[in-house]
Amino acid sequence: MDLSGKVAIVTGSARGIGRAIALKLAEAGADIVVNDIAAASDSLESVANEIRALNRQALAVTADVSSKDDVNRMVDAAANTFGHIDIMVNNAGVTRDQLIMRMTDEEWDTVLNIDLKSAFLCTRAVLRHMLRQRSGRIVSIASIVGITGNAGQANYAAAKAGIIAFTRSLAKEAGSRGITANAVAPGFIETKMTEKLGDKQRQTFLERVPLGVSGTPRDVAEAVAFLASEEAKYITGQVLCVDGGLALG
Image 1: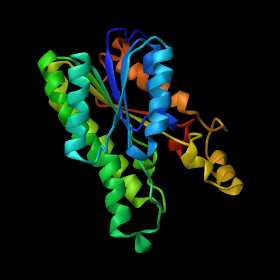
Image 2 (image 1 turned 60 degrees about the horizontal axis):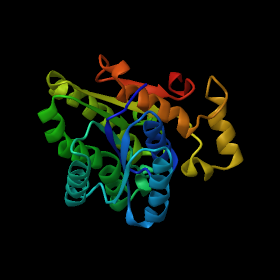
Image 3 (image 1 turned 90 degrees about the vertical axis):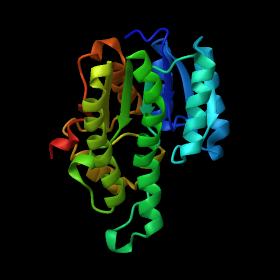
Image 4 (image 1 turned 180 degrees about the vertical axis):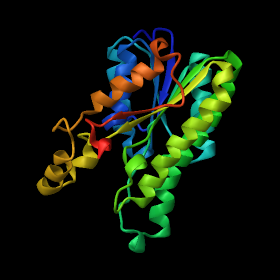
Protein backbone atom coordinates (compact mmCIF):
# COMPACT_ATOMS: atom_id res chain seq x y z
CA MET A 1 0.00 0.00 0.00
CA ASP A 2 1.46 3.30 -1.12
CA LEU A 3 0.00 6.48 0.37
CA SER A 4 2.75 8.78 -0.84
CA GLY A 5 1.51 12.32 -1.37
CA LYS A 6 -1.61 11.76 0.72
CA VAL A 7 -2.63 13.73 3.79
CA ALA A 8 -4.54 12.03 6.60
CA ILE A 9 -6.28 13.32 9.72
CA VAL A 10 -6.50 10.80 12.57
CA THR A 11 -8.58 11.82 15.57
CA GLY A 12 -7.82 10.51 19.04
CA SER A 13 -4.30 9.58 17.96
CA ALA A 14 -2.25 10.31 21.09
CA ARG A 15 -2.34 6.68 22.14
CA GLY A 16 -3.72 3.21 21.49
CA ILE A 17 -5.48 2.43 18.23
CA GLY A 18 -5.32 6.02 16.99
CA ARG A 19 -1.55 6.19 17.48
CA ALA A 20 -1.10 2.87 15.67
CA ILE A 21 -3.22 4.11 12.75
CA ALA A 22 -1.29 7.37 12.47
CA LEU A 23 2.05 5.56 12.45
CA LYS A 24 0.90 2.93 9.94
CA LEU A 25 -0.40 5.57 7.51
CA ALA A 26 2.90 7.44 7.87
CA GLU A 27 4.85 4.26 7.18
CA ALA A 28 2.80 3.91 3.99
CA GLY A 29 3.89 7.40 2.93
CA ALA A 30 1.17 9.77 4.14
CA ASP A 31 1.67 13.04 5.98
CA ILE A 32 -0.41 13.07 9.16
CA VAL A 33 -2.49 15.45 11.21
CA VAL A 34 -2.60 13.93 14.69
CA ASN A 35 -5.28 15.04 17.11
CA ASP A 36 -6.36 14.61 20.70
CA ILE A 37 -7.69 16.60 23.65
CA ALA A 38 -5.58 19.04 25.65
CA ALA A 39 -4.98 16.54 28.47
CA ALA A 40 -3.10 14.31 26.02
CA SER A 41 -1.03 17.06 24.37
CA ASP A 42 2.33 15.70 25.56
CA SER A 43 1.59 12.24 24.15
CA LEU A 44 0.28 13.83 20.97
CA GLU A 45 3.52 15.69 20.33
CA SER A 46 5.41 12.46 20.99
CA VAL A 47 3.42 10.70 18.25
CA ALA A 48 4.07 13.62 15.90
CA ASN A 49 7.80 13.22 16.52
CA GLU A 50 7.57 9.48 15.81
CA ILE A 51 5.98 10.32 12.46
CA ARG A 52 8.69 12.85 11.66
CA ALA A 53 11.27 10.17 12.43
CA LEU A 54 9.71 8.21 9.56
CA ASN A 55 10.54 11.16 7.27
CA ARG A 56 6.92 12.20 7.00
CA GLN A 57 5.40 15.54 7.94
CA ALA A 58 3.22 15.74 11.04
CA LEU A 59 0.94 18.45 12.40
CA ALA A 60 -0.28 18.06 15.99
CA VAL A 61 -3.62 19.73 16.67
CA THR A 62 -5.16 19.76 20.13
CA ALA A 63 -8.93 19.86 19.70
CA ASP A 64 -12.15 18.55 21.19
CA VAL A 65 -13.72 16.77 18.22
CA SER A 66 -17.18 16.97 19.78
CA SER A 67 -16.95 20.75 19.31
CA LYS A 68 -17.84 22.17 15.89
CA ASP A 69 -15.52 25.14 16.33
CA ASP A 70 -12.57 22.95 17.35
CA VAL A 71 -13.17 20.59 14.43
CA ASN A 72 -13.36 23.41 11.90
CA ARG A 73 -10.16 24.89 13.33
CA MET A 74 -8.39 21.52 13.01
CA VAL A 75 -9.51 20.92 9.43
CA ASP A 76 -8.63 24.48 8.40
CA ALA A 77 -5.17 24.03 9.92
CA ALA A 78 -4.71 20.81 7.99
CA ALA A 79 -5.81 22.37 4.69
CA ASN A 80 -3.70 25.49 5.21
CA THR A 81 -0.61 23.44 6.10
CA PHE A 82 -0.81 20.74 3.44
CA GLY A 83 -3.13 22.17 0.77
CA HIS A 84 -5.40 19.12 0.61
CA ILE A 85 -6.96 16.40 2.77
CA ASP A 86 -7.23 12.89 1.35
CA ILE A 87 -7.97 10.60 4.31
CA MET A 88 -10.17 11.16 7.35
CA VAL A 89 -9.99 8.61 10.15
CA ASN A 90 -12.71 9.08 12.77
CA ASN A 91 -11.14 7.25 15.69
CA ALA A 92 -11.74 9.36 18.80
CA GLY A 93 -13.83 7.58 21.39
CA VAL A 94 -14.51 7.04 25.08
CA THR A 95 -16.55 4.68 27.24
CA ARG A 96 -18.73 5.37 30.25
CA ASP A 97 -20.00 1.90 31.05
CA GLN A 98 -23.08 1.54 33.21
CA LEU A 99 -26.34 -0.41 33.30
CA ILE A 100 -29.18 1.51 31.66
CA MET A 101 -31.12 1.97 34.90
CA ARG A 102 -28.06 3.55 36.52
CA MET A 103 -26.73 5.45 33.51
CA THR A 104 -26.77 9.22 33.89
CA ASP A 105 -27.65 11.70 31.18
CA GLU A 106 -24.05 12.89 31.26
CA GLU A 107 -22.68 9.37 30.70
CA TRP A 108 -25.01 8.93 27.73
CA ASP A 109 -24.30 12.34 26.21
CA THR A 110 -20.53 12.17 26.67
CA VAL A 111 -20.22 8.91 24.74
CA LEU A 112 -22.65 9.89 21.98
CA ASN A 113 -20.95 13.26 21.51
CA ILE A 114 -17.38 12.00 21.40
CA ASP A 115 -17.93 8.65 19.69
CA LEU A 116 -20.65 9.59 17.18
CA LYS A 117 -21.21 13.32 16.84
CA SER A 118 -17.47 13.85 16.33
CA ALA A 119 -17.55 11.60 13.25
CA PHE A 120 -20.34 13.73 11.79
CA LEU A 121 -18.55 17.00 12.55
CA CYS A 122 -15.18 15.85 11.19
CA THR A 123 -16.68 14.26 8.10
CA ARG A 124 -18.77 17.31 7.28
CA ALA A 125 -15.73 19.55 7.66
CA VAL A 126 -13.45 17.50 5.35
CA LEU A 127 -16.14 16.78 2.77
CA ARG A 128 -15.96 20.26 1.28
CA HIS A 129 -12.32 19.60 0.44
CA MET A 130 -12.87 16.06 -0.81
CA LEU A 131 -15.88 17.00 -2.92
CA ARG A 132 -13.85 19.74 -4.59
CA GLN A 133 -11.00 17.36 -5.44
CA ARG A 134 -13.45 14.53 -6.29
CA SER A 135 -11.60 12.00 -4.20
CA GLY A 136 -11.21 10.93 -0.60
CA ARG A 137 -11.23 8.11 1.91
CA ILE A 138 -13.26 8.28 5.12
CA VAL A 139 -12.70 5.47 7.61
CA SER A 140 -14.54 5.45 10.93
CA ILE A 141 -13.79 3.22 13.87
CA ALA A 142 -16.91 1.37 15.02
CA SER A 143 -16.92 -1.72 17.26
CA ILE A 144 -18.39 -5.20 17.21
CA VAL A 145 -20.47 -3.95 20.15
CA GLY A 146 -22.27 -1.79 17.60
CA ILE A 147 -23.29 -5.02 15.86
CA THR A 148 -23.88 -7.37 18.78
CA GLY A 149 -24.77 -5.03 21.65
CA ASN A 150 -23.33 -5.49 25.13
CA ALA A 151 -24.79 -5.27 28.62
CA GLY A 152 -23.56 -2.20 30.44
CA GLN A 153 -22.62 -0.43 27.22
CA ALA A 154 -25.91 0.84 25.80
CA ASN A 155 -24.40 4.27 25.16
CA TYR A 156 -21.26 2.90 23.50
CA ALA A 157 -23.20 0.32 21.46
CA ALA A 158 -25.65 2.99 20.27
CA ALA A 159 -22.81 5.28 19.23
CA LYS A 160 -20.97 2.54 17.35
CA ALA A 161 -24.13 1.30 15.66
CA GLY A 162 -24.66 4.91 14.65
CA ILE A 163 -21.18 4.99 13.12
CA ILE A 164 -22.11 2.01 10.95
CA ALA A 165 -25.39 3.54 9.74
CA PHE A 166 -23.68 6.91 9.25
CA THR A 167 -20.95 5.26 7.16
CA ARG A 168 -23.44 3.49 4.90
CA SER A 169 -25.43 6.67 4.35
CA LEU A 170 -22.26 8.63 3.64
CA ALA A 171 -21.15 6.03 1.10
CA LYS A 172 -24.37 6.54 -0.84
CA GLU A 173 -24.12 10.34 -0.69
CA ALA A 174 -20.45 10.73 -1.60
CA GLY A 175 -19.73 7.82 -3.91
CA SER A 176 -20.46 9.72 -7.12
CA ARG A 177 -17.62 12.13 -6.26
CA GLY A 178 -15.01 9.41 -5.88
CA ILE A 179 -15.19 9.35 -2.08
CA THR A 180 -15.38 6.04 -0.24
CA ALA A 181 -16.69 5.57 3.29
CA ASN A 182 -16.04 2.46 5.34
CA ALA A 183 -15.93 1.40 8.98
CA VAL A 184 -13.61 -0.87 10.93
CA ALA A 185 -15.15 -2.72 13.88
CA PRO A 186 -12.52 -3.89 16.35
CA GLY A 187 -13.19 -6.67 18.83
CA PHE A 188 -11.09 -7.41 21.91
CA ILE A 189 -8.01 -5.24 21.31
CA GLU A 190 -5.18 -4.76 23.83
CA THR A 191 -5.42 -1.07 24.76
CA LYS A 192 -5.47 1.08 27.92
CA MET A 193 -9.24 0.56 27.89
CA THR A 194 -9.02 -3.24 28.04
CA GLU A 195 -6.17 -3.16 30.57
CA LYS A 196 -8.78 -2.18 33.17
CA LEU A 197 -10.43 -5.60 32.87
CA GLY A 198 -9.71 -8.20 35.52
CA ASP A 199 -8.20 -11.59 34.66
CA LYS A 200 -11.59 -13.30 34.89
CA GLN A 201 -13.25 -10.78 32.54
CA ARG A 202 -10.35 -11.06 30.12
CA GLN A 203 -10.57 -14.84 30.07
CA THR A 204 -14.32 -14.70 29.51
CA PHE A 205 -13.81 -12.48 26.46
CA LEU A 206 -11.04 -14.63 25.02
CA GLU A 207 -13.14 -17.78 25.35
CA ARG A 208 -15.61 -16.18 22.91
CA VAL A 209 -12.91 -15.41 20.32
CA PRO A 210 -12.55 -18.24 17.77
CA LEU A 211 -8.88 -17.39 17.22
CA GLY A 212 -8.36 -17.57 20.98
CA VAL A 213 -6.20 -14.45 21.29
CA SER A 214 -6.73 -10.72 21.64
CA GLY A 215 -5.90 -8.31 18.83
CA THR A 216 -3.47 -5.42 18.80
CA PRO A 217 -3.84 -1.79 17.74
CA ARG A 218 -1.59 -2.64 14.79
CA ASP A 219 -4.16 -5.18 13.56
CA VAL A 220 -6.76 -2.41 13.38
CA ALA A 221 -4.27 -0.01 11.78
CA GLU A 222 -3.53 -2.47 8.97
CA ALA A 223 -7.23 -2.65 8.12
CA VAL A 224 -7.57 1.13 8.13
CA ALA A 225 -4.53 1.54 5.89
CA PHE A 226 -5.99 -0.91 3.39
CA LEU A 227 -9.34 0.89 3.26
CA ALA A 228 -7.50 4.21 2.83
CA SER A 229 -5.44 2.87 -0.07
CA GLU A 230 -5.91 2.69 -3.81
CA GLU A 231 -6.29 -1.08 -3.46
CA ALA A 232 -9.66 -0.46 -1.77
CA LYS A 233 -10.97 2.00 -4.38
CA TYR A 234 -14.00 -0.19 -5.18
CA ILE A 235 -14.96 -0.84 -1.56
CA THR A 236 -17.45 1.51 0.11
CA GLY A 237 -20.21 1.33 2.70
CA GLN A 238 -18.67 -1.72 4.33
CA VAL A 239 -17.88 -2.75 7.90
CA LEU A 240 -14.67 -4.73 8.34
CA CYS A 241 -14.59 -6.63 11.63
CA VAL A 242 -11.11 -6.98 13.12
CA ASP A 243 -12.12 -9.25 15.96
CA GLY A 244 -10.68 -12.75 15.62
CA GLY A 245 -14.19 -13.95 14.84
CA LEU A 246 -15.79 -12.61 18.04
CA ALA A 247 -18.82 -11.15 16.21
CA LEU A 248 -19.72 -14.61 14.94
CA GLY A 249 -21.29 -15.32 18.33
